[in-house]
Length: 363
Ligand SMILES: O=P(O)(O)O[C@H]1O[C@H](CO)[C@@H](O)[C@H]1O
Ligand SMILES: Nc1nc2[nH]cnc2c(=O)[nH]1
Image (cartoon, rainbow, N blue to C red; front, side, top):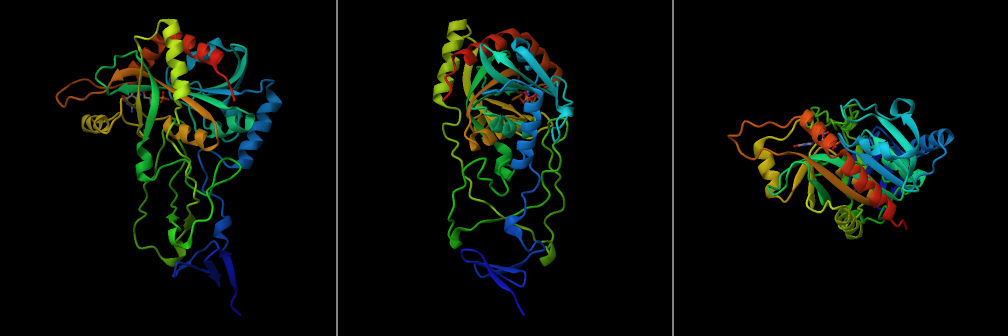
């Protein structure tokens, strides 16, 4: 006897064959709507809660502000009082950062009387952990190459927006089934606009190096019925306009003026590429042409995860080098230069972030 069930409005399954918009799809996983999202860098809800519970057993601090330290900007943790430090290696699921300039630890404590948690070492999972710990405001910092030719090495760029370049190719930390406990899912997609996503094993292990690697396997050959794996692209469309809110950008500039930093605190658009290589000259020229003022290999995905779960964000890039825009130049970007510039601006960054934290009004 054949079994028929209605899975969702307009979708039926007969003997394991899913009918969608008149198409038949046989899938191995007969309960595909309930299938867990592929392991995400940003974490599943239970995993994230377990990590929070574990952390809260170890630390007294209950942070409301999160700070992500970029390459060479880890010195921000030096101004945290009553610091309680947990190494990533002691936290299940946290990749251990091996990038020089990233210590790979969470630092809990107090900054200007406010409870904070700092990430010294960049990985995606802690953003959601911060959210379930109660963090409402996230300050993202990074080291970036300057594309805007009026920028100088050592400038700090308040991020007014980002370009998630990997997102243009489908690399977005929010891909997968939406978990409403983290953020919005906009329901009721009509049958006509159901959009299915074929999900290959594409987020294999963010390496310890904080580099988002994609194993680009041979995923295009004829797919047999058996290896078709459909993913319902849960309609999760968090708006990204005003993600880097004007209110917080204004605050950063006001504080910069008060500190006398106005001549090196700028504003611009941050572009994220996957890395791990620095950009080619042609890539730099292209990214500049489409409106970016600085480029790096991070931040946009963290911003997406943070905005998805309702956090406010403020982003700041330290311009550690000028991107090479001339084909005939013999200059080359390198990580040592990035760390060196970070060290030179360390004290200024500490002052800027401390005062911003002091003046932050949390909702
Ligand atoms: O974005 P953060 O972590 O500051 O690091 C930046 O510096 C590294 C390159 O030197 C890259 O990882 C780039 O993204
Ligand atoms: N991708 C990239 N990341 C950086 N981090 C610091 N500088 C740079 C740069 O020029 N390019």
